[in-house]
Length: 247
Ligand code: T3D
Image 1 (cartoon, helix red, strand yellow):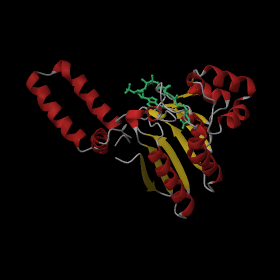
Image 2: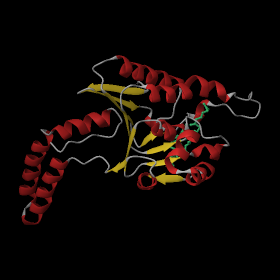
Image 3: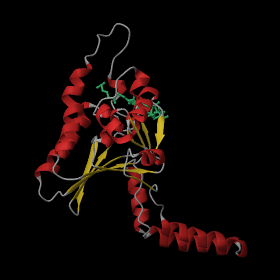
Image 4: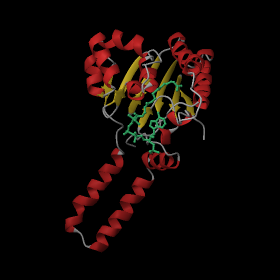
């Protein structure tokens, strides 16, 4: 499976960080694939904007810490290599991209994942999303532009609090503090399916078991023809959150 998913529709290049079992934490492969996607966005005239989001319940948990061997006899790791090769070029590439980058923060954004979002042009966050400057929890300094963007966006007092304490900031507070543009409601549900299930439950008290079984069969037939059913099953198979349209 690829570390990122890329699709293009109506001029928008949608890029989804796709390591959901690792909360979309970065490894070298994901960095390289993201770099290629951003190069494509820069080079192709048909791409007029980029939408960046994450698969599953997180946006991005920053560096994949499982890749760092910090066991007692292991050699010290020079983190400037990773920052210099991957994170700094990523932030510079985002800043230089001559097309708008919208970041849709779908869940928790931690460490470099939080600062990746801040480096985008317009940041939307699902109501259930959160932002964590988790670096201090592992003895590190905010990177990926965190010490640049944070004080500029929220002021030095709040930047210092976020960085020192490493506490989760809710999407609603992030909007209130000016860290992001807007909070949006979490993905909508399968509205058509909801309507059908209401029909079934409201009819239930007046029906015999036979009548109710027939009704369930008929309603399920209708639900099975919906676009949302197709999307729901596809998303399940691809281990991602469904994007329902209510049709
Ligand atoms: O090394 C360098 O290259 C230097 C550059 C550094 C840049 C950085 O980003 S440093 C900061 C690295 N990131 C973090 O420190 C964040 C670590 N993660 C967390 O603090 C929490 O997981 C979250 C706040 C993001 C979410 O918390 P929660 O309670 O919702 O989930 P969880 O249970 O902690 O995590 C779920 C799974 O994801 C869990 O795995 P498991 O037990 O189910 O197998 C956890 O280990 C894994 N996971 C979460 N974050 C990472 C990760 N695995 C690897 N790397 C991660 N960053």
